[in-house]
Amino acid sequence: MLNSFNYWIYLTIATMLSGCGSSTDNNPMGGGLVGASVYTVGGTVTGLDAGEQLTLALNGNAAHTATVGSNTAFTFAQPVNANNTYAVTISAAPAGKTCSVANGAGAGVGANISNVSVTCATNGYQVSGTITGVGAQTTLLLNGDANHAVIASSDGSFSFPQLLAAGSSFTVSVGIQPTDLKYCQVSNATGTVTAAVHTVRVNCAYGTWVVTDFVKPTDAFPADPALDPVNASNGITRTFNSVDANLVDGYFDVNGNYYVISKNSPYLIFKVSNTGTKTSFLPPSSSGSLSSLTGDLNGNLYISDRTQIFKLSGNQLTTVCNFTRLGVLSISSLLFDASSNSLIFSDANSSGMTKTNTSCNLTVLNDTMGQANGLALSSIGKLLVSDRYDGILAVNSDGTTAVIDSAHSGQYPLRMIFDSSGNLLISTANSAGALAFDAQGNLILLASSVGVTTGVQTGVARSSNGDIYLTLAAQKKIIRLSRP
Image (tube, rainbow, N blue to C red; front, side, top):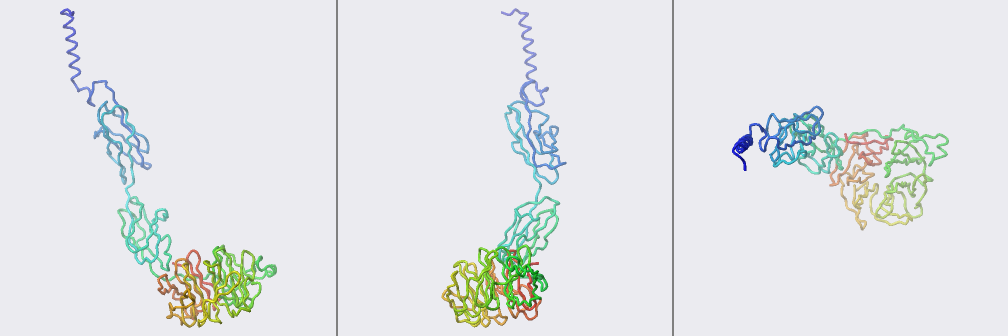
């Protein structure tokens, strides 16, 4: 038992301790006793650019901040007491950026907090506009970015998915022109972004194509060493002028090599390779004027004269069919039908069309035409023939024909080709302009003049990049039509 003196000493000490525990004046963070556990609050910041700074606040206290000047980890200098709450907010963000906080608040703190995540992003604005006149899909680019292209296939509005920072410049362009014969141009195409852009305008129309020379009359075509070795060893070089070439047809093979033939003696084949190298060579033999060119999907070239068909495979040029005794009088146009692995040709003198297989067996498709000239076969098997007197005819499966365009028969349509988009390109003998039909059958004037006054376009071809090539017999040259 305590004596009186010890009891009063014990009571005095207990009273003093009790008074200390009831005061919070010396604990500015609040909660718990002086000396209780405290914990730090921090995390990471991403999205800041060089020179940018971000200020964060803890529990809304302007005196408790952290300023971060780079993408790094941060920790507030002021801790929080055990079991207390915390909240991290944005006090000041860099100009032109928006920052957000994840894992920024919590309660019942019992350990250091290090998972606060602050992400900053540049304020962006969208570039958009409208497009009109679309007939086939068109590819639009913003600042040349093909990874975020807009594909427009109908008239209306469009918007680019990427956002641009305020103050940045923009340029809208046509990355891929439409597959039909239209040309798309952009207005209000450039500017500086200060807000969302809605003023870009794209208009697609049948405009005037640009006409340039592809092969001139004086361009040199040396004899091909592999196909014309004797003349090559003698240094023979030909030009369209020097041999009085009467150019007909024109054809791009699947490898991008361009060929054109001359129907006048000496009967020559001129080649412009896909690298631009020019060469010339002779067929094995000829029963008359060379008349047409075509090719298969394996890169083989087929060349016809009046009664024969030659085949160029690699560096081997051979005669594969001779129809002299089979009633074929004058092959005028030749095409390859991949679906049946056969050749179809028109006969100008017998006024019909005939198919031959690889064994040169003949099947007459039609023999009642006026004067058959060009042939064209679409990707869906639609066969057309141009007739000097009746215009352009469709050939039915039973061999009968139906006129699909007679209004331009007076322009004397000669060669025809379908391109990969279903447009029909034609060459004419009596038109100074370049004509075509789009996939819907509308007649299109590509260029009002191709440098001739009376016409005589004897061949037409289209390259893989969409340029169109016309053979001009009277001027002894090949011209190229390209979009502006």
